Length: 94
Image (cartoon, rainbow, N blue to C red; front, side, top):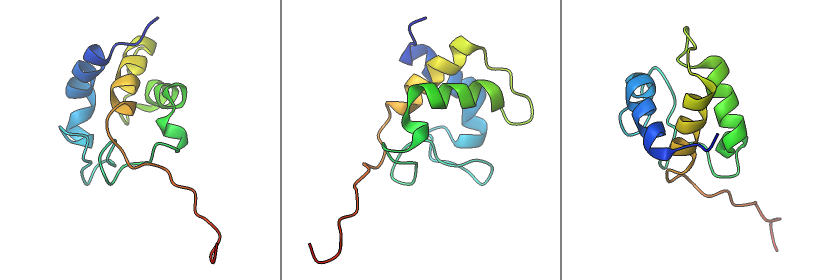
């Protein structure tokens, strides 16, 4: 199966936006999924396989019902949105 960002955007709007916000900005109910306050591009959730597996097994919270295909689509959509870049900290004084 080849994930599709357009389908992922539809799944996000239907199943995820209520809790994560229409623009992935997060709400009191759920954390941001992209943007300046979201996880960075070095985080485990920034990897398509990790995000899709988590979404498939756990989302929507309390009633997980995403198919494997929907989870892959929404994972591709979310993980390709802008997010902070991971920067390794350098040793002090170097």
